[in-house]
Length: 207
Image 1 (cartoon, one colour):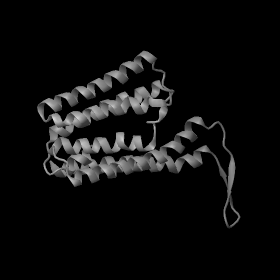
Image 2 (cartoon, rainbow, N blue to C red):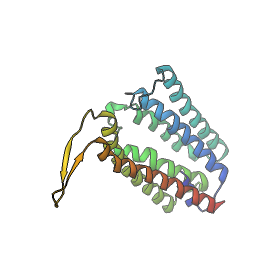
Image 3 (cartoon, rainbow, N blue to C red):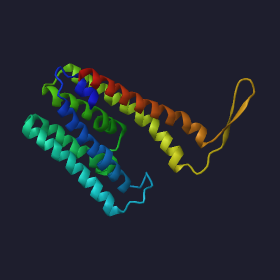
Image 4 (cartoon, rainbow, N blue to C red):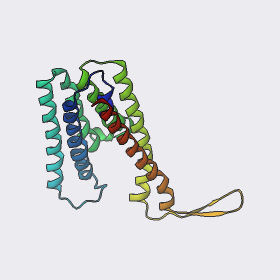
């Protein structure tokens, strides 16, 4: 979202704060709560009622910010607000038989849509630069998901794994969950921190 905002020809810090706040409520709170409601992948002890409250409340808060933006900035923000409001439950609750719970849906909802929204909220014009930034964020999200899926499989669903790796010089290395998950999780952490630092740096440049 910040990457999209700083790519716009004009920069309004308050609009960026509003869009980041909406994103944190929609994804940081609502999406994770709904995800936990649908299968308990995080293994929390929160009750179903608490998860519903967080899921609905977080999404409602994000939509409220979007409505304020549509009224005070431009009604052209409405389609983006609606798209975000539909994407969160559709993906995390695996609606439509799970057909929307795909890698490309994840990339569009968590990568491309926030980046384009951050850009459009600043300039209110669709320009090639903003579209390309959104596409780039989609591709980064694809990479993130392709790393996270096997990492979660190893960390959460693997009861036991054993094997060996034979090197050309005859050396044998034991294989286990921790050894296989370490490079995946390390890459995920580096990717997340790198994007966050890049976004923060570019925002500081525009201030």
